Image: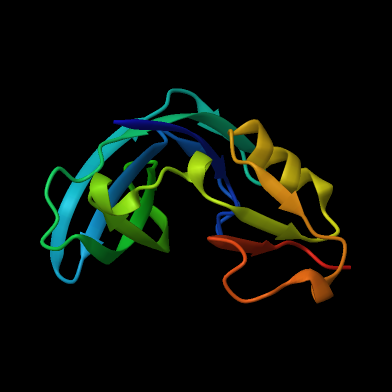
Length: 150
């Protein structure tokens, strides 16, 4: 199971207060649901406000290939009905495919937003900060992240 900080924003077209807030999630590959779940929070969410909570979801225990391009589907429910949905393309892979671990990978980072580099470092990812795009050479890093440019 993975637990993440989830943020729910009430931007309802009806400008309503949402009671009995719940999030339904699915990891979908092609037409197959690889894993799914449901989590609810107590309280009300007035229009144009937000709250955060911890969302725990189970990663798929079986995938048909070593790596698949899947979709994380999130559906917001409240007031006894479906409210809205979001979808995110994700990669799901077997643990062996993901080796070496991210902490063993070489990561190059270029961008004006120093917060992203600090975030990666706080997660144990060693980052080589690039001062210029001229420093980018093919194959120099396992991962190259180009952050927000102003």
